[in-house]
Image (cartoon, rainbow, N blue to C red; front, side, top):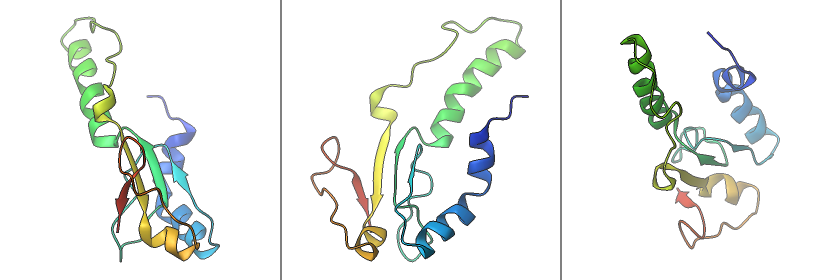
Length: 112
């Protein structure tokens, strides 16, 4: 098992988001999992492959290993269309910031 600093960060995401919101700091994550519609606590923004999608790609590789095969390719590339860019309108307004409302790929998917 390989534990990375990102595992710790993801594990305390609600506390980080709470702190950032309370201090009016715009937090930007390497995934979009915590950009949530209001009134839920939300990260300001994120870009990347959502964890569920990433997990499905990794599961294919693990399945090959468990079946005594070597994954081919060793690492599956995640296509661009599987990546997301999101930003919270609620958090932006709270920080008196305007979001680029052009939508992907020229701007984030704006979450209310």
